[in-house]
Image: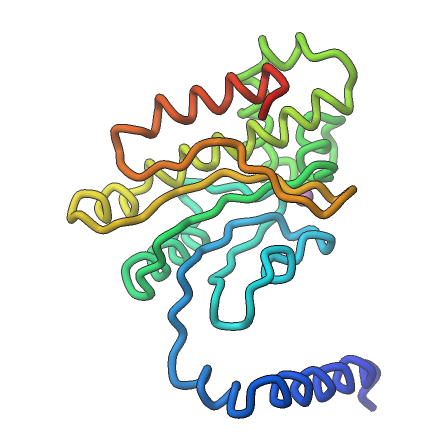
Length: 218
Ligand code: CO
């Protein structure tokens, strides 16, 4: 017995709507995808990548995990970045975090959550790196907001340090890396500042964005 019948009904309704809006939509899309953007975001169900930037199927290549973390040994994420840049030729990589991120809060909360504490250790490392500035922020909610922003900025730094971005820039491919944060309270995105177009900009722009975040202007 199919117990999730309502989802299949939703799917059929969605197909009908899409076909009505643009006849042949799926046939056209099946031929190829050529998204301009790669989105690296949190798995949180309240942050649906395509929807919040108004993009349709075929326009956004997506990788999501808990707390939008990019790790140099995560072959899942690295494979997505490599395919996006080397095969699909995306021009913009967007790392997007969000306020109220449970992963970020857990990273600086009590340990004892099992496996996920290892994953979130990377966010904890961001906290440690910026501890001096974060400890000066008054209010735990405000501190977590700043940490959400700094986590994005540090993941941008990591994306830029991968062999994939370094090689792309080295051969003259035009790719920019952006750091954004999404507010689940009002649905709005904020640009945290870094828009990195080459290896020489990484440290200076990420450091400046981190300083702005800690100054409350992120
Ligand atoms: Co999250």
